Amino acid sequence: MAEKVTAYRFDRIDETLSQLNREDCAIIAGGTDVMVLHKSRRGVPPKFSKPIVFIDHLSELKQVYQTDKDLHIGACCTYTELLEHPLIPTPIKSAIKTIAAPAIRNRGTVGGNICNASPAGDMLPLLYVYNAKVLLRSVNGDRFVAISDFIQGPRRIQRLHNEIVTEIILPSVLEEGTHVIFEKVGNRNADAIAKVSFAGFMRINKERIEDIRFAFGAVGPTMIRSREIEKKLVGKTLPLADAEIDTIVAEFDKIIRPIDDQRSTAVYRKTVALNLLRYFLSLKQ
Ligand SMILES: Cc1cc2nc3c(=O)[nH]c(=O)nc-3n(C[C@H](O)[C@H](O)[C@H](O)COP(=O)(O)OP(=O)(O)OC[C@H]3O[C@@H](n4cnc5c(N)ncnc54)[C@H](O)[C@@H]3O)c2cc1C
Image 1 (cartoon, rainbow, N blue to C red):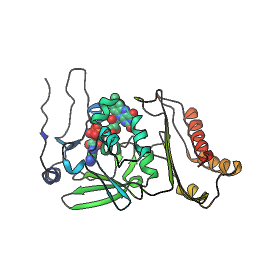
Image 2 (tube, rainbow, N blue to C red):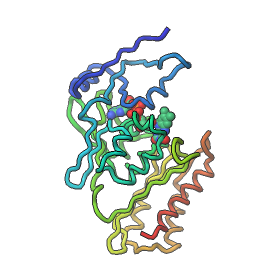
Image 3 (cartoon, helix red, strand yellow):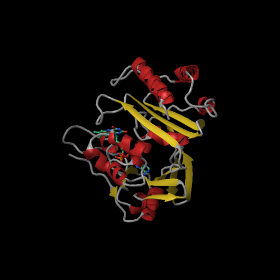
Image 4 (spheres, rainbow, N blue to C red):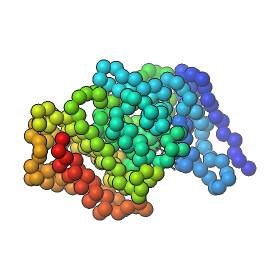
């Protein structure tokens, strides 16, 4: 017989936060990761060891708005909603189009992708290169955490049990002169988990690189990013010389250490990751 589970669904975020403060609950947004994680046998409802609290209907978590040059994305915006929103940058829309199939995109949320903290989460490489910040709210107030600090390892995040991720903030995302790409390699163009993913960000001023960032997905426990390597390219003139590109590729060769698993081999992952980096650095901006 199916076990009973206590489920909460409050109309307001403050009621939800009070409940989370009273009791450790499993948060469910779209449920597309949670339901898979807790599934039992076919035909048997998923098992939860603690009460669940639904948050995906809360309007405070579904806003997209701009303040100055920053873009604020509500954690419970679904992929479909973001695809349709005029403020969402094209690279993010391109990444979303590679995620799952429309049925999952109608349920899955950006906040869920971050909090699930999968090494293959498709929103993560871009959020890393946009220097995204995560806004967490609890009864004690708000706090901001850089995405690279928030995600600590596979399924490990810096969240207290009484906190909800309410927004993802992309600083200066709407600034002119930036060139951003997202590439994902999987078995198919969509509806496939990434074997490797890559995001590149470059801001150029009069042929010179003012800022440059790279993040690799699915080739380590979390996204791979190195500010030290990035700094070596700041101030360089485009197009980069072959030798300059070789140096950067060689630096990442040392720090990218993928694994073999059911989706791909470590050798394939590393080769493709470095090819994607080389491709980005060779683009005529
Ligand atoms: C068939 C299928 C295909 C998929 N394909 C892809 C794919 O191609 N690429 C990809 O990246 N992912 C894929 N996924 C994974 C999943 O759809 C995404 O990670 C999605 O973004 C999760 O969002 P959600 O709202 O469903 O999260 P949920 O399942 O509701 O939650 C995920 C985790 O985050 C926590 N959480 C959620 N929201 C918050 C919040 N606001 N504050 C605090 N904690 C929160 C939950 O407690 C849980 O631990 C796929 C899943 C399925 C089932």
